[in-house]
Length: 326
Ligand code: SF4
Image 1 (spheres, rainbow, N blue to C red):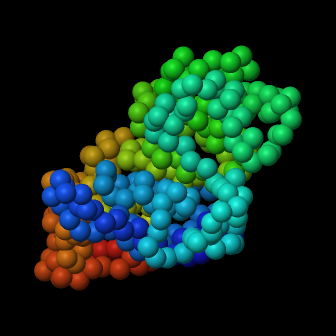
Image 2 (image 1 turned 135 degrees about the vertical axis):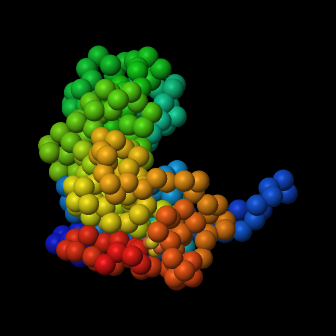
């Protein structure tokens, strides 16, 4: 666990999100999926915290849970100093103004029967931020300009735009309520590399303008390193390493982080410390005993198979969960 930040905007303590599966007659697998299993972290106002891990690591579930879009089983979520873990009704709706989400697939989250203007104006109407129609239209124009679209785009429909432009529409909609935190859930994964850079640069520029904090979820470490001040690495529901972005990418300590970095030539290069990841993420229904990474870890020892390593500080601001890390 990193030391608490001076003024955390978001504080998550020992959060757990477990799902029961296999209740339907046709489903064969039965049991509990511990998608998020005791995660703690803090995020400062205006900071970008990257969250990386393979598919099935639980990172998207964690992102949705901190925004109270999913039920949690245990733990605490504090936002702007207030415990929001169990907020309901109007108090939760009011809080939701302050945190938003941008999805990987904007087309799936943009109502195809509404114009772009109507889509961006919707949160303004719901939260009574611009009750007057003229005010709403002006605000929508400003938001579209802020994300690099034209005022004339308000009259068009989502299907008339490219993937990158649709992501800009999703960002404009998220910005409408002046959030302090945006969870970006794989926002550039579906885009071409050149468009990815444009969207990442747009997010950085909006952060500089409006002081928004991002929890930036992605599986591409190179993209995450570019935008984040700190990075957390997640594996099977647990944080296994967290550090300042450059330090984590240049001097990873956990074998799983080393493997993720070894797979990205732009970061990993030809380091002698390369770790090649083999096999798939084990089923979350049958979590390995001890260190959850041990079936895939080239350094696993007898202890790793029975005792789970705690996440502990190995240097100031750098934590890792591995028995072999000093
Ligand atoms: Fe590998 Fe053991 Fe460290 Fe787990 S605790 S990452 S199995 S060396």
